[in-house]
Length: 457
Picture 1: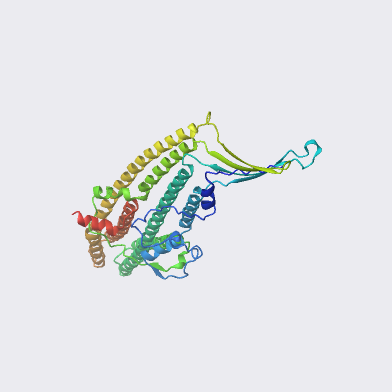
Picture 2 (picture 1 turned 90 degrees about the vertical axis):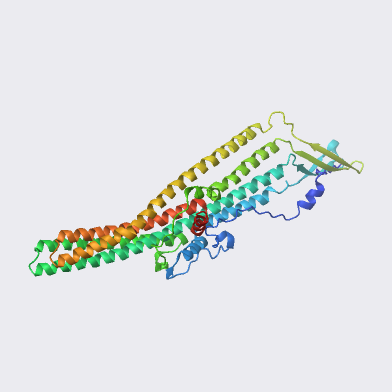
């Protein structure tokens, strides 16, 4: 006797035949890019994986927009995050798939009574687990929330790449200005040494004074070497943003001395904090935790095993159909441990979101204070200190030539001028860095921040 049994989910057979054979494609819901750098596209948006690793050889002069575009297209760090986004999309696709059916073949009653295969019962079985409690929908919601989170992580990294590139661009501008300043310092020191040499030759000054100014001259030359070395480091750091070398560009184009008129109030900046990906991502974190809790609750519902069997009896050459259902009895394991853990994770996420908001507001207050100080410092140095020290040096230098001032007076005026000009460059760099910190914390451009200030005046 032969028996053929087919385990088949008769309630889900039509769904399996229709959905199991169809190609389903879903994509993670990605957040809209923040306005900061939105005009530039990265690898994930363009899909240009092959061209990602190639950069143009000699770009000559590079402005900020080009540096940002190059960094987004060729950043090694950002490329890794783009793969995370695509992996999340693939997990979302997988989460929506039904479980595969089962196929079994079973032969019984072999050689019963020495009859060989004459009286066997053969079974061919097809079966399907039917997921109850919304498990498949729960998995899809978890995967969708994970996709949103991967999108926010990509957006965070995108803004980080933009901000780091802009900071290093400012660093190169400041380094270029320091080299220019050091060259002018060497020129002034040579001018001072020449004036002292003339007075020593004329017998109006001791040769000891010449040694002093020569020492000052050599110190300024050392300062020039340090400035050039700093420029090389800054150029390398900037080029690393797009995986290039410092030789891939000659110089950067930009105005370090350009500042904006006023700054937005702290209260208005704080109102923009919810736009920051660092905070906005916690909405996706919360959705993920809630979806995970719902999925754990769904897992507590036993799944149903439906079967259809076709039986053939070899002994009398008759056939029969058999139907069956089965499920696990949730007597001991009702997934209560995982449900409790998911509740704690949700509570932790809500606490972490509050802590992140407080940290961002604190960082923003510090950046606003730093910007206010830097703005005031730049304004005073530009309008008062540097012009006054330049005037003092010119007067001391001319007065020394005429014998009205001593060498120490001229050297003090020279050092004061050098320090003031160096402080001015440092102040400008700190000013732009503070602006960049605020832009990163709020996810907005400097133009938007300036317009916001004008609208609220």
